View 1: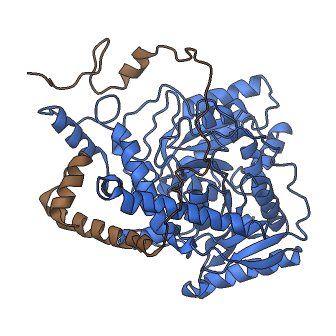
View 2 (view 1 turned 180 degrees about the horizontal axis):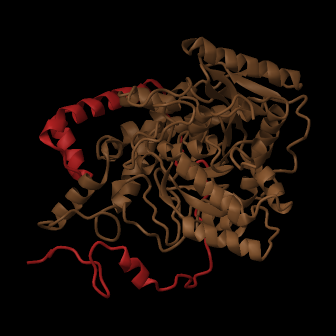
View 3 (view 1 turned 120 degrees about the vertical axis):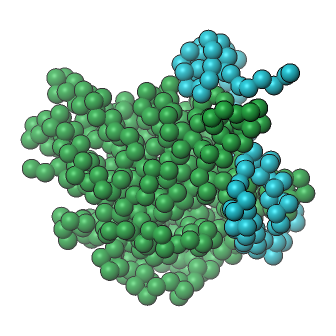
Length: 93
Length: 482
C-alpha cells in the first residue's frame, strides 16, 4: 500500500483526504490489508465462492405495477430540486 | 410503582390490571429518558406521537401482543416522518417517507416507538464511538463503552428505560453490546426478519433482531418482528413458529459443542471462569458438552473484513449528495459535489471501510481478496454444517472481555478483533444469542449460543431455562438484584 494506491482508491470511492491525514490512512490500510492477507495461507482451489448464506436464486413475481408515484415526497428530501427533477451543477457546457 | 427495569411481560400485566395507564407509562418512559440523558442513548425522540398513541389506547383498549409497550428503535431503521440518521452526519436531516417492515410489524402489534437510538455510524464500529452524535455511555460505569453498533439500544434497555429495543447485527452488533451491557440479544437466521427499510451496510450479513432484559421478551419481540416480506428478495419464506411456545421445554439431553480452535487461554482469567461456570450450570440442567472442530473459524475476522467493506463500499455509493442526505456547500462541478459531500458527510471509520472495499473489489485485486474471502466463507459455513451434524448448539464467549473505556482502543484491527466470536454466525447466516452470564469487576459479560439455521426457538428455550435458574440477567446498574 502506497500513497499512489491510496489516491487511486480514494478517487474510485469519491473521497478526498487532507494532506495531514494521508500518512495515517495509508498506514491503517496497509495494516488492515496485511491482516486480511492471512487468507492467502489457505487452499481454496475448487471451492465455490459463497455470496450469500441463502444461496437461492432471485424470486420472480407477477409483472404488475405496485409502486405509487410519490415524486413530491421523494423530491422533498433532495438537497436541491425543482418540481420534477433533482438539481445538480451544470454538466454540459 | 416505578416502571424502570420492567419487562414487556410485566408491563403488559400492569397495563391490563390498570395499575398504570398507557399515557402514564409513556410519560414515565420519557421521564426516564430525561433523567438518563447523560447516557446519550437517543438521537431523536418521538414524544408527541408516542403520547398521542398512548392516549388513543387508553380510550380504546387493545389486546395486541405489544399494546402500549414502549420500544426504542435503532436509528438504522427508517421511520416514516421521523428523522433517521444512521449515526451519520450524512443523514442529519433525513426524514424518511416510509417505515421499515420491522417498524411496521412492531407498531402494528401495538408497540409505541419512543425514539431512535444512537449507534456507530452506519453500524460500523464495536464501541459506539464512531457515531456523529457522540459516544453512548454504558449504564454500568462512567466512561465505559456500551459496545456497538447497537450501543444506544443496549444502553436504553440496560438502564431500564425501555423493556426492549431493536438492533441490527452485521458482525456482532446486537450480541456484543448485549454482552457488554448485561442484557439478552438475539440475531436470527439471515432472512428471518425483513431488511426492507434497514439502511444497508453489508447486505449478505445484515440482520435485525431484538434486545431485551430476558429471553422471554426476545421471543415476544421475535413473534412480531419476523415476517415473509415480498419487498426483500432475501426474506425467507419459511414457517414462523410461536417463539414463546417452547421456552420451558426441558433441555436435558441437548448436546452443546465447544469449539476446539478457540483458544480461551488468551483471554482474561475472569472471562474464562464465567464461561466455565456457565458450562457447569448448563450441565446441571442436563446438557452434555462435546468438543467440535471448526478448522477455519479463526479466519472469520479477516474474511469478514474483506466481505463487509466490499459490500459497504457498494451500498454506500448511494450517498452522493444528489437525491437525499448531505450536500456540500457551493460545489464547483458535479465531481466536486460528489467528493466533498461524501468527504464531509462520512466519518473516519466509514471512510476507512469504503476504501478497503474499493481496494478489494478493484481490478487486479478482486480474485486475491474478494473472491478468496467468499471461498473461505464457504469453508467456514461447511465447518458449521459438519459441527451441527454432531451437536444441537455451539457455545462460545460473546466477547473477549467486559466493557472497556472509551478512547482506550485506537488500533482499528484490535477493535475488529472485538468481533472474533460473533462474526462467524453472520458469515454462515446462523442465529446467535448473547445471554448475561456473569460479572467482571461489576461489569456484565455474556455467553453466546449459536444455533443451526432457523433454530431460534431452541436458542430462546435454552436461554430461558438458564434465566429461570440463574439471576445474572436480573441485576441492574442501580441495584445488585432487582
